[in-house]
Image (cartoon, rainbow, N blue to C red):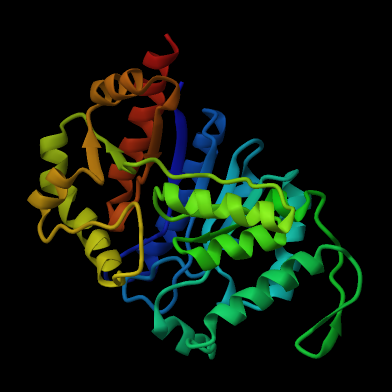
Length: 328
């Protein structure tokens, strides 16, 4: 059976509140379906002040999903830690860990948009030092003991049942991220397939006497919708996928590596590129069989403001036609 993942970021051009309300409610219901069909995880994201409402509050939505599911993991990929108060994050994540039975993971990201730092009143030029102090505060907070943070004495209770290294990964695509993870004994989850970064991370772990744990994205990452007629679906939904791809593309700089960064400028190029794909159920079955034990399907049912009914087509076709065919 494939590793099944569901991704949400609730992008919606125009930001109509009534439609966003329906999308968020549908996301919770889709996560319940994913839970019943043994998906591994739901992934969430964090961005701020985006014209299309790109998800700004993943911890809040994580709580809703965890409260409605029994086995499904929630991974926030990524939580922009320097834009948040790490003490409040430590408290919120501790409660989610306890209430969910340890089903929350957080990838701590540095972020790459100066306007988000300005909006948060955070120092863009000092973001590396801010990330270091925030990660240290997060780890120290879960000791349950008093410690000093920003010249004040703080203590976080309750503490999570899961150790910090079982909850938090450090995100990023450069050596500073690897050094942070190694020094604090945390796992590393880069934004792209970067074997050279893995080697550097393992060297750093050896130097600091910590145990390396890295989740490496595959060489090719794809975001998938399922439809009975992919050609028709591309004609109807392609602009939604392109909107998300262009938004994300506009944030990329030369030093950013991302497995889902598109270079397409129109729907035809996007389809040919293969990062976003719309598959017929039998195509999905054949791909999973060909990939064998390493088969992974990342469903993105509400991508770019895809109409909710089309999002449900992806979820239902996958759970009713793809998974049963593979089980058989």
